Image (cartoon, rainbow, N blue to C red; front, side, top):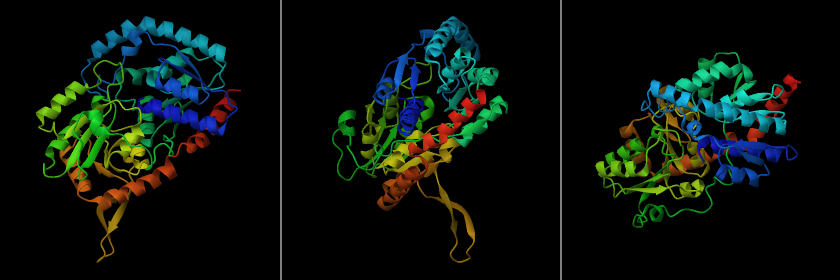
Length: 413
């Protein structure tokens, strides 16, 4: 599952724990892990598949986080080609919603925001839960601004995303930040570990090896190229091994690397013997516990950075691309000169280390710093775990969302 799907599952679990008598219905476009895990929570799940043209439609590679590999004219052709499928899908979704008679409709992705606005019954309040920046998406920004009057409130997964939504859509619809939450019993320092060497087809690493890993989908903006380049800049005498953990996930054209492309990059950078590619893993917490350092390397501002919080929860030292919502997760404190008692201009990180997006040399320095200092790794890991327990435990989701649900339903009655 991608980050937005994982966040949705944690939301459903939090609501189910807090309000076990509530009827929760999930409508998704394909069967898979999200559907299976939602059903295990007692959530009624219906699958309404996207037509192929609608599944492929996406603007992340048309000036969005995946770059500019798709031109605006090509995007317009995609939209026109998908228009009939959109109309048919919206009609089917409208029929499903009429049968369910929901008190609240809570959408979780760009396509469903628009389809939900098109299909919702007039009496049902609509909540858009936005997990990505809007302004960088040329198609979705226009459509969300067009349909925002059908939405009662927009939830953002960070203050950075909230500011972006207001800039893209104006102040017609209220926007509120609700940070993501995770299950701290799953993402914990204690538990099973994966054999990443075996999964990657590498010989077993020695006991002195520092394991540095990046867990992400293969979306281009996630920064796998930056990570590989950073590994190539680290002195070969430093005993580290890197791991790229994850695989391509989405159907949107032009938005992802393939594992084959990344292996070619590793050969070009001369690090084939220092990096492994595990492919998809269904236990990210076990993968994180197998690492000494968890790297987040997004090349553009990250809306939230779920992997940062997950790595912290597992008690691992985390290096994060410090921009956007991800920067809100890193706590710092100002240093004070003991001689003058004045604060310096240098901040020291409390729970994770940061690096500038796309800065492979800066990331290499951070990896080297942590690989050379086991005490720093331990301190950051303990502080990160405490941060997650205080700020990002999933039980917090229900305490924030239930009042919002009650407010929007009261306003429409």
